[in-house]
Image (tube, rainbow, N blue to C red; front, top):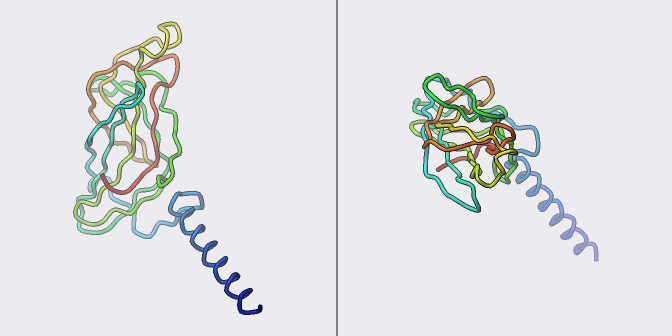
Length: 174
């Protein structure tokens, strides 16, 4: 009986340790930065593939480490639809969406380690003109901590009276 109790106790400890590890990966606990911060000059911002679903287009916005050392990006992610060469804000900032496996810290491998955020644009036609007040945007400014990254996007309408765009936290890859 004592052996069975010991096995159950060990299994419970292993399970709880695994859950703790998973919650740390998902950003639920305070993130620990394990590599030095990425130098802004070593990060290249580029739009990746897009997908559409239920009246929303999702863009994978990639941040790539071009330096010879591992580095980390960290900080809360925010996004603002913009227009023109001056990156003039259009409408309110994006709503933040929490998704499992996406958080506020990611370590990028040397020589082209990649992270991405998902930026969603809801079809302005899903709202009445009175609710939305649609205007054109052709890019997004993503802020990560103190750094800002611009991504050119196809011209599309966003709402100026309500947040019709969303952004997620960082996830490795893609």
